[in-house]
Image (cartoon, rainbow, N blue to C red; front, side):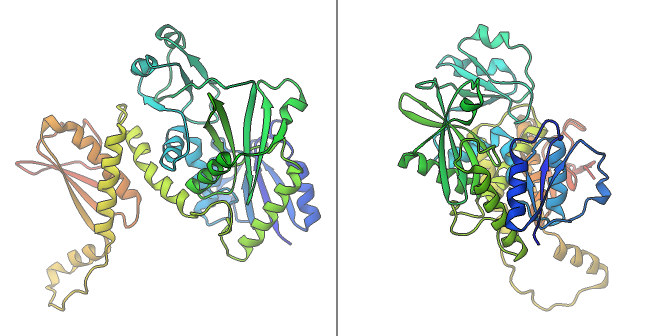
Length: 418
């Protein structure tokens, strides 16, 4: 009998139709349980792989931490942890969607609100938390006074071009495997009927948008929020496990999808079948890998990188990876002197990369190279890295773990992050 666990929030705040899905999974022959985070103390050391499939319904910090541990241990998750983590960050999400050709609003990131003024001069903006599940809501601003009235904002400040909807109806698109469903809702919804909404037939354009979104992240179970403004659709949100309200026979369709995914997991197959909505099963991994640079830059500096800088860094990282991972020619037989044996072992076990940053004028180069170094260290085969700089302010920028820094002309070795 298949064993399925659905990871939820606290029992009195996070139900929303899932008990019916559990009941239907039981009818199909599976044992399904709702596991509520926050109801009981969790002993991390006792988290075990007791189920054939885990469904990540709650994506707040506690749920994501447990999902990360399960992912590391090799558990089968219906909505993969790397993609779920990526979708929590709107900065990365909309960069991936734009790269996939999905119509999204202009997106801006700033370290403080005043940097948005040039964009605000060209039209209204909507200010939103850069990370989903934050308590602060969205605010539409049309001028500098309205922006200032929002008060201090946690950085990075995330904003998008505001496109006023053509009418009161809000469009939702849901994907369950190879099926897509459109639901129209009134915003704000005031009754249960308005919350459920009414079905509508997707146009070929919206079908194509849904396919692009699924392929961008390598998933076929998700929901989209779409606004139509002046006749043009824009994707303004994507979720890896929405409520699916308004989908005809939604709980039954969802239960069948989960059951089939659990069967594939038991057989050792991919959770997302090859003939599903996603035509690029590895797209989510590639997007997550590419987004590493955004996250590293955010961690190391409060100055946001431009799109051009990120593209240059990505090209450089990919070029270095290609060189490091390229097949090596068979080494020629040669005597190894005993004093060099340890060094030879180290060279075979860990590739080495040297990076150069020019003088004080290029202090930004040091910051960028540190970002690149951390991205390389986080990806196999984790090369040993030395950063060479013409000048250095000791302690001004800590080096990532495993990265050494030396300065010219004396090649004085600075303390690394180890």
